[in-house]
Structure formats: C-alpha cells, structure tokens
Image 1 (spheres, helix red, strand yellow):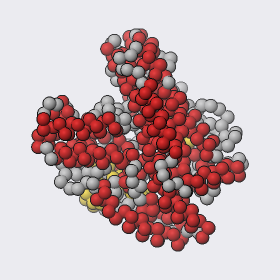
Image 2 (image 1 turned 45 degrees about the vertical axis):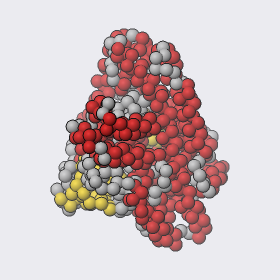
Image 3 (image 1 turned 180 degrees about the vertical axis):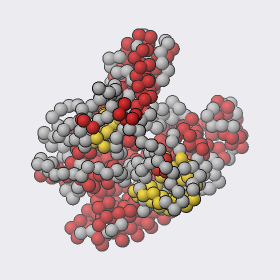
Image 4 (image 1 turned 90 degrees about the vertical axis):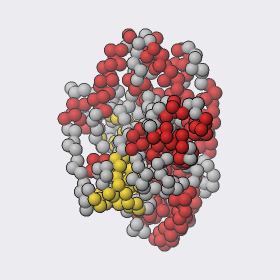
Amino acid sequence: MGTKWIIEGEIDPKWPHNTRGNIGEVFPEVITSIGYNLGVIPAEQAWRTAYDELGIMKKGDFDRDEPTIIGLYAGYAYLNLSYLRMMGVRAPGSSAEAIDVAFFGEGNPPPYVPRKGDKSILSSLKILGRVLKALGQKELPDAAKDSYAAVEEADAKKPSLDASDEELLAYLHSFPEGFRRVFGNHMITTALAAIVSGILADAAAAAGEPGLVTHLIGASGDVHSAQYSQALYEIAKTVRDTPEVMAAFDEGADDVLDRLAGVDAAASFLEQFEGFVAEHGHRGPNDWEFSARTWDSNPELALAAIDSMRRTDRDLSPSTRLGDDDEKRQAAIAKVRPHVKFMDKMNFDKAIKAAPYWAQGREGTRDRAIRFMLPFKQVYRELVRRGAGRGGDPSPIHVGLLDPFTELPSYVADPSSMMAEVAERAALFARYKAVESPFFISSQGEVPTLEEMEANAPDAAASAKAGDVLKGDAGASGTAKGRARVVLDPADGAMLEPGEILVAPLTDPSWTPLFLPAAAVVVNVGALMSHAVIVARELAIPCVIAVENGTQLIETGMLLEVDGTAGTVAILED
C-alpha cells in the first residue's frame, strides 16, 4: 500500500472515464480538506440538480451520493468525462465528441462507446425545449440575475470580524447551502452556453474550417472576466500619468501601496486601486479553492499586472483592438452558413445572436459564485489569523488541510493540540504539489499512489528549436509575433514586457490582466469554452490553447509567431 491523499474518492464503474481537462484550469492545485468539504461536495449536489432541471440527468444515472461528476483522485480534482458526455448524447443535434471539443480540447480521450440507457427520448425533448428557449435569449439569463441576489444575502449575514470564534465558525459552516444555489446557476448557464456554442463549432467544422468558430463567437461585450483587465488598464494609465507613482513602481511593486500612502500626488491612483479591490478583490489564482490567494488578501497579484501594463506607451484598450471584430464575424458567417444544412440554418442564425448572452451569463454566474465565497474566505482567514496568534500555523493552506467541521473548531480553540497533524499534512501536501497526476483515469486501479507518481515523473521536455511548429487548438483569432515570456505564477506577471507573448501553464481568469500587455497568449491546457479563452476573445488577444508541455518546450526570449485561428505556434528563433 502506497501513500494516498488525505481525501480519496472512488470511481463509479458506471461512469469510469475521468479527466483533468478543463478542471485543471480552475482547480490547478492539490485540493485541501476545506476546499473539498465546503466547495466540491455542494458543487456536486448543485450540478446534479441543474442537470436534472435541464433534462440532461435522468432517473437512475447515479446509484450513490458521493461526488462523481467532480472526483478527487491522487490529490487532484477530476471531471467525469463519461457523464459530461451525456450532455452531448442526450441533447438533440449534439454529440459526445462536441462536448469533448467544447470542454476538454486536448489530450487523447478514450472514445465514446454507446451503451444501453445513455440516450433518452424524454431527456432529449426536455433539453430541446431549453435549447430552443436559449437560442431566443436576448438579455442576461435569469440564473445570472439570481446569483447577484444570493451574493447580497451572503454579505448581509456576514458577522463582524470581531465576533466570537463560535459566530465565525457558524457562518463558515453555513456556506454550502448558499453555494449550492450560485453554483447551480453557473452550471445551468455553462451547459446552455456549451450547447449554443457547439452549434457554431459544428457549423465551422462542416465548412471545413473549424478554427472559424473563434470568429463566429467573437467578442460578447460586458463579460465579467474581461472587466478586471480593463479596470487595471485604466489604473495603469493613471500610473503612467503620475511621475511620483511611476517612480514608486520603478522601485518595486510589492510594497508600493505602503510607500505611496500619504503622498498627495498618488491620491487618484490609490483611490482607483481601492475601488478595484472593492469591486474585484474576490478573484485570484485557483479562486474556487477556499485557502487560495485573492486580490483582496494579496493585492500584490493585481499590482504585478499594473506594473507590466504601465511600461507601455501603446494603446492597450480592448475597444481599439476589437475594431474589426464584427467584420471578421460577418465574413465567417458568409463562409460557414452555406455549408449548414437547410433545416439547421434557423438554429445557426439564432445561435449567432444568442451566443454573446450565454457567454456573458456563463462568466457572470462564475464571477458571482466566486464573489459569494469572498465573505466566507475573509472569515476563514480571520480564524487562521486567530489560530496563528495562539501559536498555530499562519498558512491558510496548511490550516485548510483540517476538516472544517470536525477538526477546525478544535484547532482554533487550541492550535497546539493539532499542530502535529497540520505539520504532517503540510509535508504531504508539498509532496503532492510537486508531482502531476495522470490526465485521464478510467478505473480505481489506475489511481496512482504518491510514490508511483514520484517515480513516474516525466523528464523535462527538450526545448523546441527554430523551425518547429507546435500544434494546439484555436482559442482566440488573430496572429502575432513577439518574444516569449514564460510565466508560471501570476504573481510574477511584472516580468512580462509589453509586446511579449505570454506562455503559461493555464489561465484561469486571475491571469487575464496579463493578457492586455501581451501580444498573444499560449497555454498548456484549455478548450473552446475555457474561461480565459472567452476573455482572450473579449480583449482581442490571439490565443492558442492545449499546447502540450508548452511551458517546457518554449523558453523565454524565443521569437514566436502565434496563429490563434489555426492553433499553431511557430518557433522563428531559438
């Protein structure tokens, strides 16, 4: 028996195939106990409820209550590929393969093998009704509006951070009930957005140019995950226009807020940044994880993006870059529409009009779900702070390895009584973080132990060389040429020079402020419906996704040519 993570799920043999695809962007790190118990379990429950409402789930799909759609194996979160394919199998006009393209976009997944019970006429009819309604969408979906109300309710119930341990713990433990509501809204909009965009992806494929789907979808306007970048760009312009603030950033961005406090010339910058944190501080890398950093708790993450943007005198405004977006969309429609079957042309035309609203809805419900978490994360960090003051561990991640219901209350009251467990789990966390779990797992016997992952760690990939062309998938249209800048953590974003090509392992929305100064973006993982791909389209940044081992094959300083429509990265110079 080898070492296993502190929580280990069991693969449902009825739905055996699981993948890190897509979920690797939003859960890139090892999952903590608090992240699993407060987040994943209610998310699974909400997902099932949403799919039941949409008609995707039918009676008898699940024989157990344990998380199956979101699995936890070898320390990392997985999505159940077998079950998510049912959205394509049961939705009229869709397919299992279409779901693979929309959500996962990379790897070599096990092929879908039809089974008795997969298809359901009742499910198809119910889904058809929802899809036809979705194709007529002309405003922000109701699910997104409901999520705004849920956030206001959570804020109103938040106790003062001066409240007792018991009050703070009670509020923290109330999180799952409200989270089920906002996450369910996100799943409804995500499913319908995938089906609507799938209509456009299928049409582009039928025309023989699948990359044109990036033009068909285009920019949606008013997408939440793009607003962060736009807001930070406005702050960066203020920095550029204020010599005293520019000089402070020249000395380093990390403690710039402290150095500028009380400086009269910096008042406008400080006011803007304070407003940004108040509006968008809930975001950050790995932001579904309870113990992760946010712009609220770690403002230096946002300051790094400002530091990169303020060094350019080019116009980084997305509105300028998007000047020809509609022209490209109309040209793509003219090229693709003749290849759409006569009976499908009406749905194609409706999908063109509805796709922007569903992209907005999907990103809006995701943003509100993360925003719902903010007051609970603030309460959790206060409990961690109190524990550290009583001799405990100051790391939110390490304390998050305790069960939030059965262990955290005892730890907060008397940290010394549980420091041995915290230290042991923290050491185990570090070992798991240093390895990479398999991209696909299809049976319980395939879940590796920690020792097996350490022994089988792949050798570093040899760097690409001039003349090589790396193949990925189309993310956001356009071409760009520039020097590569490999960035492995958004906190290191200040290293990115304007006009360089950002090469990253993944890009959840917390990375997207780094998109604006970049000429293009290349990522190791991603798919058509990846959150950051939607943002790249909003910001008119060429983007290539699913470039396997891209951060190893590409080195900082290489001259690249990125084609976001073809999904290629050409190495022009070593």
